[in-house]
Image 1: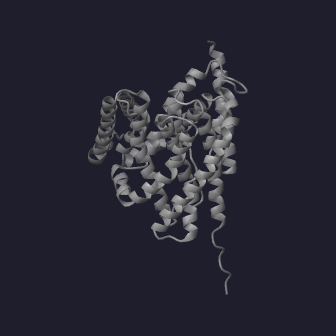
Image 2 (image 1 turned 90 degrees about the vertical axis):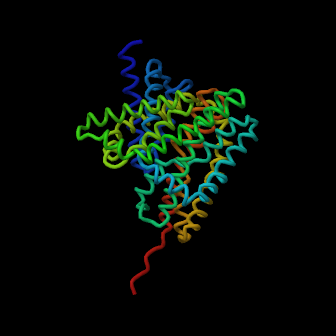
Amino acid sequence: MKDWALLVELGGVVLLLAIASRLAARYGFSPIPLFLLAGLAFGEGGVIPLVTAEGFIEAGAQIGLVLLLFSLGLEYSAHELVGSLRTNAVSGVVDGVLNFTPGFLAGLVLGWGATASLFLGGVTYISSSGVVARLLDELGWMGNREAPTVLSILVIEDLVMAVYLPVVTILLVGGTAGSLAGSIALSFLVVGGILAVAARYGPAISRAVFSHSDEALLLAILGLLLLTAGLTERLNVSAAVGAFLAGIVFSGAAADRAQALLRPLRDLFAAVFFVFFGFQIDPGSIPSAAPAALLLALVGVGTKLATGWWSARRAGVGPRARWRAGTALVARGEFSIVIAGLAVAAGLEPELGPLAATYVLILAVAGPILARVADCRRAAPRPAS
């Protein structure tokens, strides 16, 4: 392998990602679809397949996944997760039934097995926390009455993922009914144990890790993060879940500083993660997956609109706010790709990767557009009398 070729290929990928990010910011949508398209272009069967940089990007993608989920965990505390679960459990159940079921049934209709259908159900179920939070901020919806409802649904979805991902990962490994039951019980024990530690000792751990030295704090947090992700992966609980739970442990000044310090690294390696997912998909398989993905996307728009409308109505807000809540939840993104990536890496179902990629491409673009349409529907101010 020639060092110059590796550097040239990496430089080209990073520059393309920079252009994609600027385009997304310019036109006000998530850069995730453009990152996926870059992966399709540089992967096998793409326009310019990479030769020497693929191994580096694969390692970078794993780091990106860990940083992405850790940053998401930093947004919550264990008490907030439990509080949202208690207050909005009914909305969470409605969200799960409306949005998981279409994907699961679609997998069965396509002739996939139950395990592959469970993965597709996960892809269609969960909204993109990153895209939704960014939308709420950019559109000035954070102070709206529907915002707590939307954020509560996101919190519940992320908490569900902390249980869902270990379970489907264990199903991929396979084994006897007894071993599967034992592994699932172990995953629940690990997740519950980390949440309990976060609730009781999170502030103390945060104070112990906190340092006024950026270098010391960054190294300490990265060390704990990678150790937690690695150990949970060893227990078949998934490094993504371990990273998410590690983020929940930190709070206060340590969490705030960690977010600021890790943001550049997270953005870089998260982009690499989406590119690597695109690497694994043959662009030639996209056209055949497009009809099913488009149909699922149309259903997905409707089910998220229904989820937001019903949940916001239950919270006592008006029709326009219910519409905004529904459109805010439409976008799918990082977790959908995480779920599909696990299945693709395991070789579970060849059609799942292209279908999931096309589905996310459609809804990561459609979600922000629908939200902006909803924003334009605000009542015009009455003329002064």
